Image 1 (cartoon, rainbow, N blue to C red):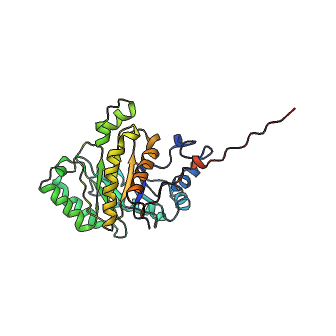
Image 2 (cartoon, helix red, strand yellow):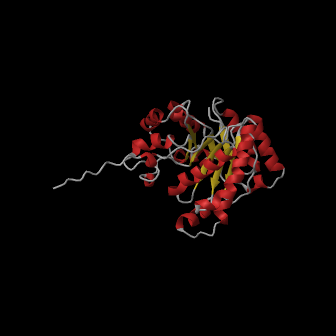
Image 3 (cartoon, rainbow, N blue to C red):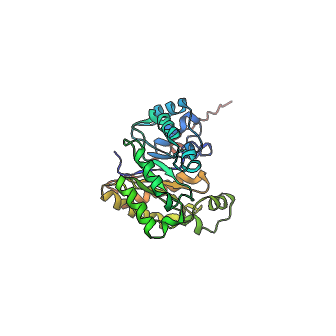
Length: 291
């Protein structure tokens, strides 16, 4: 069992071919090659719709036993119905992903920014009805939960009492960046700009980091996160850390950079990063004919 899980927000990204993936990788090779390097991933696609049963069956065959998927709850549950009257959709979500039993990390519930402190009883009821065999992480986006007041105290207590992890979404590097490329501008438009709470309410702290698009500019922040993650491991927790980049094409570089820093911080627990499939890619020999 890993003491920390590291990964990217996605695993099937065709632009990674020849850079992260081997040059000849097809879609069926993406997950096996990704899992050679990283041991977890966010499953954000389930926010928009459930994968086909045959797709889930394929993932179950392709992912090694040590791999962990962290699927996001469907938006119809979290945003459209705001956790009320969504029993059928919730049951369908778990049923569809059940073939991956044993490869499931914390399920990820991202709440709408309008889900404020007045709806905490709704969150409490919803969490209490979820299957007990799974782990969960909750991301709040309402400013009410970031003011160090009574609403935030109630939220943290509610989650801690149930062993549910509070998602930590660190976008400071993104918003501090002077970059004006289209990917960064779009990310700033879509991502929340909220304070960071270094609090672990469960046994699997859940971190989502979005940094400066220039990967090397993130080293200072990543060193701090390496210290935090190391401390959590010392406490017997199993953190999940996902490295986002405004342009998904560079997410593996950012994740590798953090992996190296975490290895330097705690070499006895975290091995050095694995080689990428593209780095082990064997190029066909070119034979020259002499006339």
